[in-house]
Image (cartoon, rainbow, N blue to C red):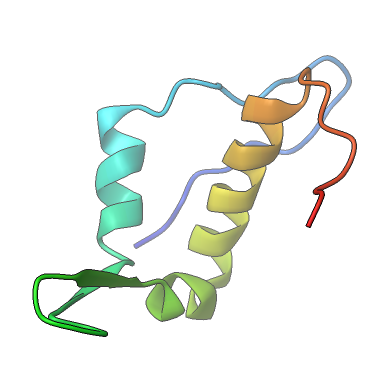
Length: 77
């Protein structure tokens, strides 16, 4: 699976809308683990996404662009 991620250039922005095609591509890289850690829970394993450099880059770029204009400064834990 090849992810098409445009090169960054001045003024170029990634779409903030998660399209059906992009969603399908990401879902191909996320594995369901039923009944983990207990019955009735479906754990979403993103290890396959992390292993695919292009898919992971596309996911991170999408998240960054979606929240670029928000006022998130840091996570408070």
